[in-house]
Length: 202
Image (tube, rainbow, N blue to C red; front, side):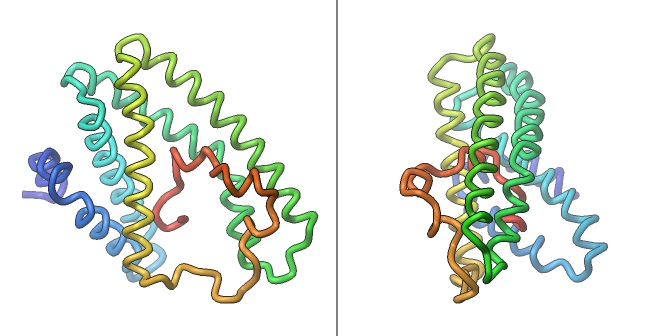
């Protein structure tokens, strides 16, 4: 039986018992791919599997019926895609900034502006998405979806941190972007966390 069929047959069990192990397996597999070509080829498949697992997880958190899940799934995939697109520029700029030992105040100001732009775009995307969900889901289910997204993303970050053994730090390569950000920016995480980039980009 193929991996995909195995996943479909056991999604419910994974949601309840093996979420951490499953996410860790995906992250290790992606990070351990032997070549750039193989990584790009297999990464898409792995990300598709990860998204499917995420939707299964959210559906459980939201207590969706099969009919609701069938309607929710394509809408969520589109929402996820739009979120990633809205955050692509700021993610790329921040990764580059982290590597720049000589980043200037202007660089951090630009990051702040990009984050604000991304927040505004994300809020608009979420507003439209929630409006669509309101046609067939309850307010509680929508609330649980957003809470579930945060829970899922925190698990992702936790697994990646454990896998790297804390090596995913700056290692004295320069200040964190948040170090020069105003306090209100530090205390208010980017809303793009609800629609994060791929595990490789975290």
